[in-house]
Image 1: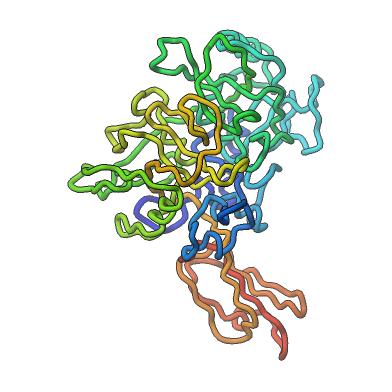
Image 2: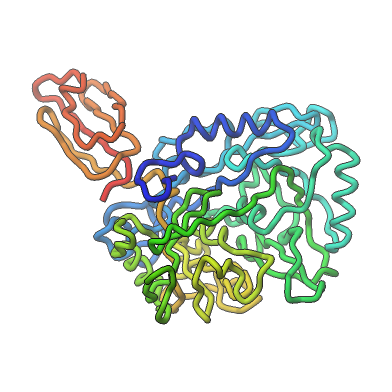
Length: 457
């Protein structure tokens, strides 16, 4: 994560594993966890024009047709590259710990049960939130409120402050690369759709928001309150959003450290305001627009991933469901994300800010449909947050002499493939290395590789 107006990592979100570890442990000790950090989406692959494949310079590098895709950045990419330290388990960049009914931490092999030492809850070590593990039965929205009272009277996992999650919290555990849209090893699902605690503002009390996992692959949609959906309760501090207008055409979201474009693409920022019409463009053009942007003097803009863009939705507002005192919004309020839709890679996720609907298909309030990336939607750019770039800059046979690169790398390693010796090198603002001078033993004829993982141009 990057602080506003800097290029140094801001470690409160998707940043250094040590900080996340300390934060998660701290939130476990306290009665209420600390939230604000966003999970990554779970997407580790990139679109190559026909299918989802391993992310490479050829398919998502800055000179590629589909640059700066979701799978290139963040915790998920770091986990895939073996560069992410976790205190728990979980696929991709997710980091979960099973918690017993008595509140103690458990190994990943623990099973669900009613015994005090059986698995009853799951702690998200990224956000600090605790989740109810077992979710049997379905409930109307009002009956779900009653379930909250019951669970708190029981004191599940030693806590009595359980509640229905917000759409942002519940969507935060969706997994974009999983057919069930969730890591079922740590968060089993028994039903497709789950209630949130938020009512749908313009419905006069008839609808509430839900997240649909298996059937609609992580969509956030409205549901009639009389319908019976499943319930997964949560506990932990609820997020209080704070947006800072930097007066340069950018906005800092201080709960995540992300920096956003104040205006939609196509508009012009001048004297604190956005003018002109937003440009609705295809997904491919949106990726290119991010790569080519030099807003506020920065060249690391990208299309936000699904979790990031969904974090801007304000469910207390309607038409548009965003803070309009800070952001401009296009009349047609559907905005692209960089996250591809795994069930049909020719589609991508987008967020509807006209009312907050979040889905990957084309029917308003409706089903998930493989909506073509050739459709034209709006674009809001983001920078920061994704501290790891999965693309490597490897140079073989570096025996002597320096190798240089741009920007601060996430990790640097010199490897002697002949002797299998390697040295992990300090990364502090370094832009070049000589493997031999860094201490690697190199003999004549050895095959030495210097590998850089990081935020490079």
